[in-house]
Image (cartoon, rainbow over all chains, first blue to last red; front, side, top):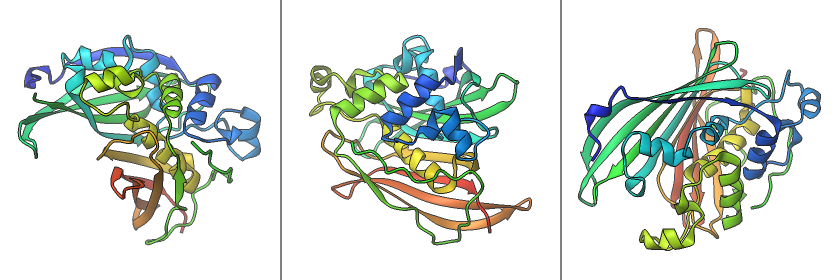
Length: 151
Length: 147
């Protein structure tokens, strides 16, 4: 079981592009048909300085982390089959645009325990991620809460 | 999954007041193809979301949708309401699973509006609700708005 000893653990740094093909694919996966989400000409025609991105765009980092989402769970030493995603929160400081390159740095921020409603202990693991753009600006701050269930 | 009808995506902050509602949309029925498309788009290849055999062996009735898929659908819908560049914060709580065949209703409203350092900010409450009435996501957001 995960314990407080992992607080402060840093998870691999990942640098990844915000490129047109991935933006088009993500928009399509969300059921969005508006070309503004990936086409520079459509975005300019709509009044944007560059192609805007949806608020969950930072999920694209998962492509570039070894092992993807499962890789994160392994990195903190948790069992994938017992982990649930409880919460996610994003704070936006600088808009993310097509053509940006983001670097994500992740750290285990907190670990706490509580009794589950149906018995058994639940361990809550808080992971902080900072996404910095190619200009060195902190663009997005993300916090995830993972829940490890006791079997 | 049915696609959203294209409406203009706002650039500047939009005028919103307490009690205003986000246009309600229903998406679905969600299919395994939607989950697989999102797996490819996002890089989330957790087998519980695409491998029926693995999901059954894990004691589930089958595969279910990634939380970040319907969070992303809600986020895109929120962006369509307030403008993508005006969102300052978006927070989602996963409260239940989404299964193939589910139809999801996206709702939201303005809880309150306040001035923060001369900037008008709206606090929004949002939800993704299954056809059974159970919420799959409860969410909140903060967005810059016009008066």
